[in-house]
Image (tube, rainbow, N blue to C red; front, side, top):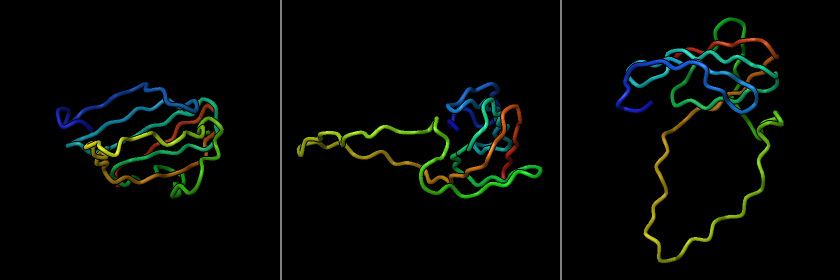
Length: 113
């Protein structure tokens, strides 16, 4: 979360694959995530700190391609980069990626570990 917003919440974010996401955070870390599935299928989430599932939901570490057809990616050619460039690759924060099955019309809760 942005350093300028150490604590907060947002609701109603619509994500690819037919998901609606509500989340809350404190001191820059996710405290609660609620994902409502409109269409069902595999949901893949990427977080920067581990989370656990609430209720009977079972999270599993993501492996390979996402089986949900809404996440199908196109083949993209590598960019042409000048040998004279001084551009650096961005530093990305470490993350954890989980998969879990969803059913249309159901909501799922994740919380900080």
